[in-house]
Image: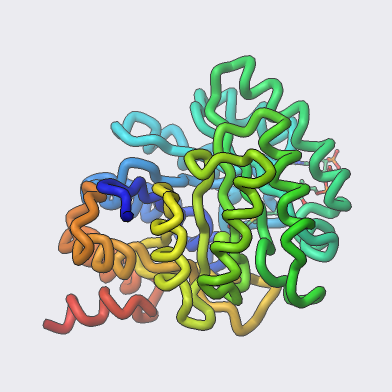
Amino acid sequence: DLPPRVRIHEVGARDGLQNEQRTVPTEVKAEFIRRLAAAGLSTIEATSFVHPKWVPQLADAEELFPIVSELPVALPVLVPNERGLDRALALGVRRIAVFASATESFARANLNRTVDEALSMFEPVVRRAKDHKVHVRGYLSMCFGDPWEGPVPIHQVVRVSKALMDMGCDELSLGDTIGVATPGHVLDLLSELNEERVPTSAIGVHFHDTYGQALANTLAALQHGVTTVDASAGGLGGCPYAKSATGNLATEDLVWMLQGLGIDTGVDLERLTATSVWMAAHLDRPSPSRTVRALSHK
Ligand code: HMG
Ligand code: MG
């Protein structure tokens, strides 16, 4: 059975643009977010309140957020620590995401911490966010494979997932950061999480399309009951730690599949495609999304 409706968590403005070589001007980012909202996306991850030296592409978070904050959509932002939370709360942010890793190698590369040190760093962030009635998403990276460590054992992923949920996260996004997952592995992980009392209703999936598996993995997750799917307009983004990794699942490719299945997303595919074509012109390279290419060359 497939769900009648899927909520798309749009990550292009954050996960996409954080990986672009050239930094996109703040006003172009704001216009991108406005156009994504106009295309019907209701959850648009806007930016990150991380250390500006770690992700210079998003160093303008303080300038960007107030420009878009009045849009009638949810605008979650990434926050790694209390310093990031303070910056976000000062601007009236209502939704944050912390981001953990299932592997030690990526925790070190992405957060300069061990897995458990990162969890300790998030604990006061989540607690204080909840005190402010701020919605908290917990991202978990490298849930299937890791560029340094290879395949990642499911029990390792389940342990950190449970820690994030026990901490008080409202939702959990399972990241296939380097795009190596296949559908059977996805179903095994979802089943094991359910066994350990992490409910499917709290789980979102975050696939990258490196090996062309993102849609197959998504369909498996939907069949399991997942209704939150992360995607990036035009397939923007990659992973700075894995050269061969291509972008996130393209939102247009996802919407094409969901439309064909009769699943409601609220997204206007034509407007969304036009937005990605517009963004691709700014970035000076074509969108890797098959659907964007097909629809824009008709
Ligand atoms: P650190 O170097 O260990 O930082 O970095 P620290 O805690 O030692 O602090 C050092 C200095 O940074 C201090 O300043 C802090 O105030 C400052 P000083 O006292 O030396 O002058 N600082 C900050 N400044 C501004 N904002 C902050 C902040 N925090 C500390 N928030 C840290 C640790 C976590 C900060 C760093 O590693 C970091 O910012 N990492 C972010 C990396 C990142 O954004 N990665 C991409 C997102 S994850 C992802 O994309 C995966 C995902 O898409 C899912 C998937 O596909 O898997 C979500
Ligand atoms: Mg990602």
